[in-house]
Each structure stands twice: as C-alpha cells, then as structure tokens.
Length: 246
Image (tube, rainbow, N blue to C red; front, side, top):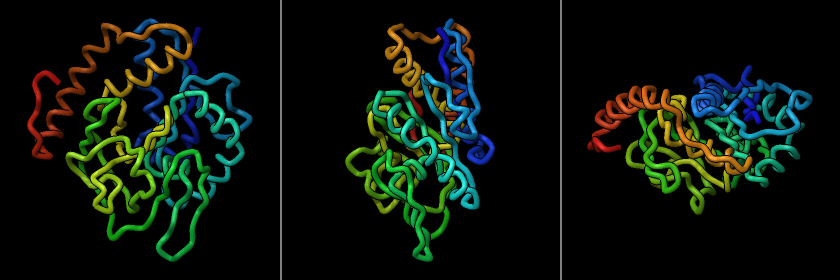
C-alpha cells in the first residue's frame, strides 16, 4: 500500500512554499513505515485514480483566473474526494479558489468552486505577520499570514479561534474554515512543517480511510524538536506564554 498525495498546480500555487505541505505528509508517512508518493498535478489528465490527500497552495492574484479555470476541469473529482473524506488542504488563494468566490475592490468577482463555504472579500490594507490559532481538532497552530482579503461566511465552521493575528478579519476572532476533512487557512509556513501535530492528524485520517494505523516514526521526534523551537519563538514574539509540555 502506498499513500498518494497530490500537490495541485504547484507551478502557480506555490508562492509561499505551501506546495511543500505535500512533502511533509510524504516524509512523515515514510518515517512511520508507510510508503508514500507525491504527485504534481497541473491538469486534470494528471490526476491519479486514487488519492489519499490533496494540497493546494497559494498563488498571486495574477494567476487566479488561470488557476480557477484549471481547477474547474477537476471540480467533480475534488467534490467527490471531499465528500468521501479525503483530506484537502487549501492555503491562501488556494483556499479562496475552493470557496464560493473572490470579490475585488472594483466590484468584479471570480467565481470559486463552491467546495468550502464563504467567500474572500476586500479589506483595507494587507495583513502580514504571525498568527496563532487555537483549534479543537488540531491543537494550537502557528503560521505566517500574508493576505489582502478578509473571509466571510465561515463563521459557523472556522478552523479555530485566533490568539494572535487577523485571520478571517472583520473582527470575527476566527481563522480558516473546515468542512469535514476539507480545510482552508491563511497560515503559511509551510503550516504542516511548523505544526507536526496537524500533519499527523491528517495522516491519521488518511490511514483510517485505508484501514490501517498511523503513529509517528522515531525520526519524526528529531524534526519535531526543531518545529517546537520555531513554534516557541513565534509564540513569544506574539506575546503568548509557551507551554513547555506542548
């Protein structure tokens, strides 16, 4: 058995290195003794028949329409996999493209795929900086946000509650959106490298769908130590007390 992890549109949707979230899943699976491969997919014809997880990173606004048009050719497959519980992680504009759509300040809009609830809307000024999010399913997450839009319509299904940063904006106090195993977030990092417990949670979902167990391998402990140090520095910078046990 081999986990198949798809990195969607890495040619245009990887401005913050978010496509490497797929590599994080692949490596952690291998360290746990589970064979895994990452497939780079730029068009529908390259989609594998069976998929265990999908990563869609962030891109520039200049590539939004092109990326959306390509994703539309995969709409039925993406919706089916999402319904079947395949983890789909959308970051930044990748998340926005999975939503109802993206509104621009000039009144124009780009229709999204409608797989996640909510839409991206203009905000005053760009947000850049550290963000910390408390989540019920994935623990406390840290990352870097860099976006010029807020997100509305996800109030009933956020990824988590903000402890630092702007997140979805509009004074919502929330970050991201979750529908089953389909997740959208502003957090760059790549987020799974900075938050190994988040990666492991997705890998457990992948393993359960295959009828096997997942437990992090011994090598993961060394890498997780580096991630913990980076997380602690980011938490201190955000003025949040670091829990030594976390």
